[in-house]
Image (cartoon, rainbow, N blue to C red; front, side):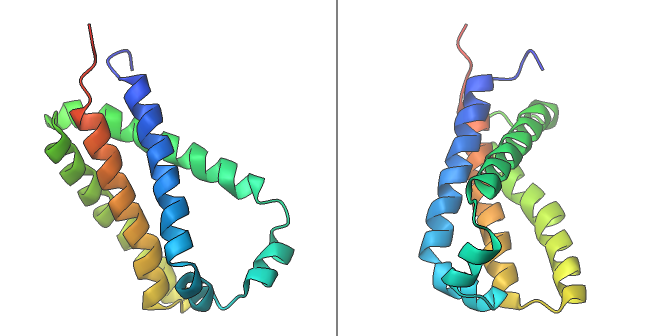
Length: 137
């Protein structure tokens, strides 16, 4: 992992987290309807929002490190190729897994679109940051 640009990975992970905050703020009403809950129910079910926030940031960093490890092995060393790789990974691995699980759980397509869409956009941005950020020195 010595060739990994750790600063780019951390920035990518934090940006992914920020995209999630904006994504779910913008789509909050639709997301609540899709999960069948109200804001009050969420507050009761999860009184300490720090826990899912910490988990979300940790997951974003793990994904960013995986992308940083994978990009040079694929020869994806630009923002465009990093974005393409990130979005393909999200579609092929995350969106498909969610679709399978949501089918068995009888969850709505709108929830799948919201959650999968966030990961596709977020991972494309992470790939662009990591692929395009050239390490100095």
